[in-house]
Length: 64
Image (cartoon, rainbow, N blue to C red; front, side, top):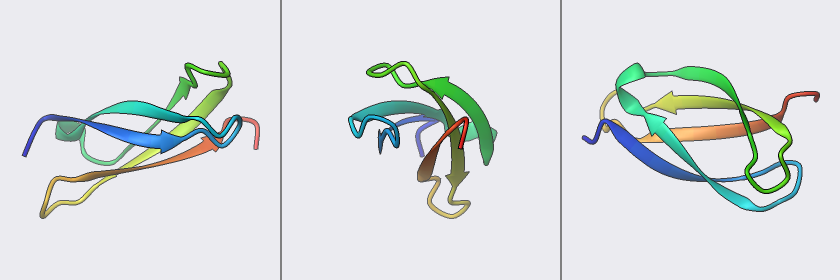
């Protein structure tokens, strides 16, 4: 299991796929990061599978 993983996530604002760097050692987490294409703030919710260590990322607009 890698400590960090890059996860491709579609931006819900502009539709472009952005790469999100996830620190898997932190477990499940929620934070705000700007889309590097459209600069809109996104709420990223990260879930890390405890068995495989694979992260899943869900992106929502901050002002949704």
